[in-house]
Length: 90
Image 1 (cartoon, rainbow, N blue to C red):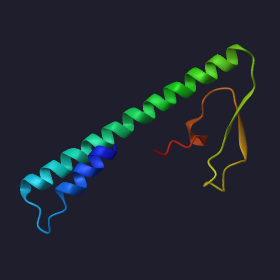
Image 2: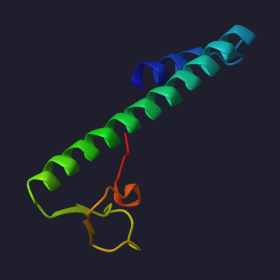
Image 3: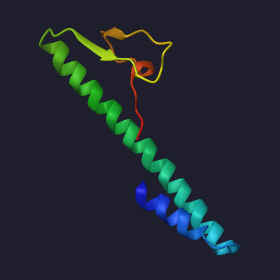
């Protein structure tokens, strides 16, 4: 993700980027989005695994609402994964 951001910035750094520069920047942007999507999917899968493992041991779990969302409740009891209460910022 960082590498694609760097590539994109470098490609768009010239005052008048060429068509090739813009293509490189667009391609880097697409790769960054795809990398973010894969990372989010991986994190969700890991959370599912942890919740399932904890539930199999009879543990009661809670996922804290993101701190930057004042409208959410302070904590949510979880029986199943509810992605609305999970902060997935990269």
